[in-house]
Each structure stands twice: as C-alpha cells, then as structure tokens.
Length: 140
Image: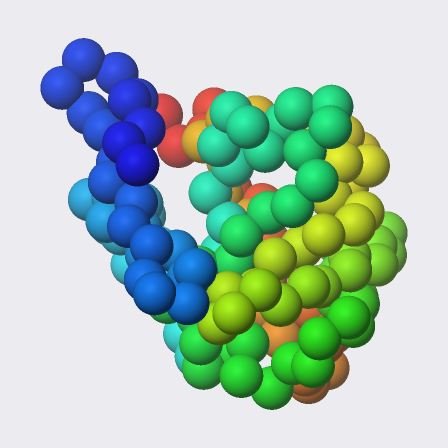
C-alpha cells in the first residue's frame, strides 16, 4: 500500500503472511528515532483514515512485537495523558494487534491531526501506558 504525503513523499506499507503491518516510511523512521522508541513502547503515526468518524480498528505495527508479546486477546490498554484515562480495547488478528474499540472518542478528545505521532510508554506492565503526543504543527 502506498500513502502519498506531498510532492515526492510517500510511505510504503507491506503486510506479512500473518496480516502484520510493516511500515517503511523514511519520515516515520527518522521521527521514531528522534523520540527514542524502545522495547517497552509503541507508536502510532496518525493517518487520514484514523480520523474517520467510523474508523473501527487501528493497527499496531508488528515492529513493536517486544511490547505486544505480553498481551492477551480481548484485553484493554489503559492509557493516561494529562490527567485523563482512556480504555482502548485490543484485538489480535493473526500476529497483528489492533485497537478495536475506544479509538474514535480517544482521537476526538485529543484533537488529533494527520501526521501527529502518539508514543505509548509502558508504565504498568503489560497493559498500562502513559502517552506522549507529538503534534505535526509543533514539528515545523
């Protein structure tokens, strides 16, 4: 799958046999390196389809297997940010994990925009996370 960003910029997303997503975005990879992604974290870069009113599932990239290996199907992530707490339901499809419920309200309350990067830092293993939001508008 190709995602067009701007003139001359695009992302390539490939899927493995188990349905796991692999992102090959030079832009996303360099930004991930800047925010210091480690084994107990995962990130989601907000895409246009993540903001649809009826967006039902958000993929968590297979790149974060070290973090997701501790999870069991049909559990909830507990995410805290600036005094707020959200419960996001997880679903496993093959080897791929997805946020399957709670995302729409979560994204609306955070007023996310395309290009924003969410970094989930595990603070209460295996399902408790604090959240850092890097806004696209603040990066430029």
